[in-house]
Length: 609
Image 1 (tube, rainbow, N blue to C red):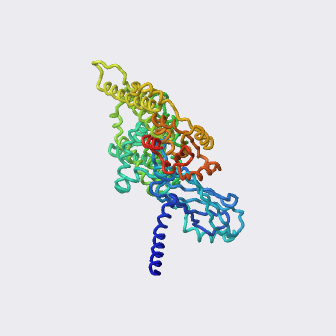
Image 2 (image 1 turned 60 degrees about the vertical axis):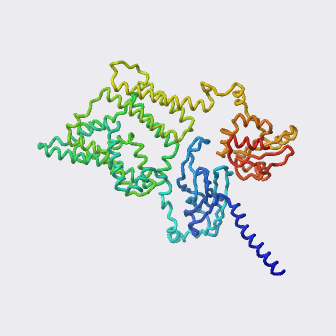
Image 3 (image 1 turned 120 degrees about the horizontal axis):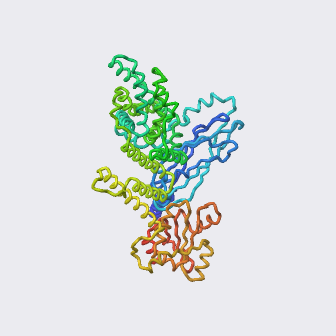
């Protein structure tokens, strides 16, 4: 008996031990935050680096723009800066914008500034970390976790020596590579190596030397180099001098861009962050549109006369004068090569490597200057270039359209998808009209005119598709042929009657003898938008919900005591959550919806009640 009792007891203990980890695992939160001080002894007024680790469960993510670090005691310790690494950019069709998410494990560095007037002693730094995340189905409420971090503030005399001892474990901003997300250049370098990448960068520079901003510099280049080389008697010596001066001229251009590369590597993430600012992107868009208008003849951008006169008349003699003119040319040519130049600079900023930054832009500039070197050596080659005329106007119009396309590419980053689709549609339609899509053709029309009309018609078709299709989806215009009956059309115009108070909704359900549903949602919940745009507008769903009292609770402010009470009452973990209540007032727990369900699944649950 005793042995049997002992065996049963042992079996029970083992069963509990096996069950406990399962229970614990099931309740493990999807997000874990760990905060560590990288310096625990500091002098007054010193910087304290803090390492923050976000551990994110699989199939979950945290929004980068919702991560914030605050000090709980700003009088003694303030947050000087926080370095957020790049996340994964995904387009959210319900928020109608691109969002940057963190997945897996993320390392964040924050820097605290101790007050200069803080007396020596032991302190507990209170640090607040804010974040908000979602799973594939539900969104969790914005959360704030507070951490207490002990630190020892030493007397001011401890100063330099103590600071030097503790500084090595955590040099500030030592790894800017994590701060900026590199694009195609990084992938190219990692897959093909730096040598092949430099060749590709050189070829990109050669291709960009034919852009409209570089073309007007060709005659000036010939005037400067040709004027300097005419003093020599021998034709062979003249060509050699022209070659040498061409190299000096392009060297000036290369120095301008190399300086940009070194500056980008020095600023690190600050450069990449600036390029992501809506204000900076808006400025880039304005520059592209301004250049496009000049291509369409609205106004003309010319090199200032005081520069062109000095460059063209040979007022500046000698190698130094040619070099200075090269510097000016590099600045003048920069607007048209902005997109490629910006991509290079973003990658260089992500590496923080000044040496690489110098050579990548140096090679790029020499590619840009190949055409100028060739024309500088063979001054007569300028005569072989086509003269301005109708063909040049057509080329300018094409470049103008390309510049507007580049402006739209950047504009989509700071406007909603709806606005972008409308603007794109209008742009294509206007392009169709002005490119000759509706011009009348005759037997005498050239192949070029026919090609222009074909291009214009294609642009018009796509523009109409974008514009009209989008307006139909938004319900601003009706489709030309309706597949629904008049009765169905009336049904689709109906809306769900929502009660915004839980107490009033339940009273109404009791009086009318109806079951009730309670929809918990929030403005920060992207998954909640799916119900609003897909499930609730469905005519069958609207018809079925007439049998219920429909209650909608706005949980945007999770600090509201009423919201907290409702979450506790109904066991809400994340949003969206839809709770069903029978006619007798009992909650149907097994029918609770967490996360998005399509109209068919939603109807199945409604009808089962």
